[in-house]
Image (cartoon, rainbow, N blue to C red; front, side):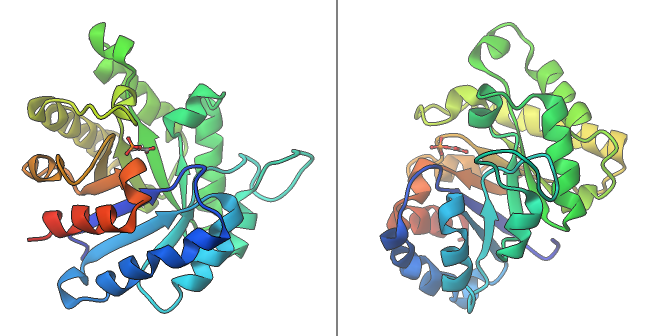
Length: 250
Ligand code: PEP
C-alpha cells in the first residue's frame, strides 16, 4: 500500500442494483488519466454487486471491497451472512469492518476484532472504522473511545500494514456536519501516535469519513494528516465522486 498519494473509498451502502454498475464507467475512464496514477480508488458495493464490480473494473486499477463480513472465516450456519473466504473468492480485496451502522446493529469491539483477524487470514485488506458518537464527544470521551476501539479491535492482529484506518465521527455520517479542522487534526495525531506506539506501525494510513462532499473537500484537504476519504452518500453519484477526487489532487 505504498506509493499512493491519496485513498478514495466509496461506500455505496444498501444502494445500487445491476443497472447501477455501468454508471461507474465515467469513474473508470477518469481514473485512467496519468494524473491519478497514484490515487487508490476502492469501490465497496453491496454484497449482491461484488462480482459485477470486480468484472466491470477488471481492466482498470480500481479495486473492490465488501462492506462487512461474518467473523467466521469460512462457513457456518449463519443465515444471511457472508464470510471473508466467500468475499475473497469473488475477487474483492478489501472489507470495511466496524462501520458505525454495523456497530449499532450489534458489532462490538470483540466481534470486530474477530472479523479483522478472519479477513486478514484470507489475505484481504481491512478498512477499519472507528469514531465517537455525539454524546461521547460532548462528554469528552472521544480519545478514550478511539483508544478502546483501536486496542480491542486490533488485539492479536499482526498484519497492521494491511489495515487502513477510517476515522468517522458517528455524528458526521450522513448528517452534513464535519468536525472543526483543529478537532480532526487533533484526533488524527492521537490515532497515529497510538498505532505507532502500540503496534509498531511506521506509517499507518488514516482516512477521514463523514459527510465528505465536493463543497467541504477543499478545507478537508488542508489537513495534511488525512491520507484519503471514505465517502458514503456523495460516492453514489459518479460526477460528485470524481469532483471530490479532482479537488483533492491538484
Ligand atoms: C459512511 O457511510 O462511511 C459515510 C462516511 O457516509 P457519508 O459520507 O454519507 O456521511
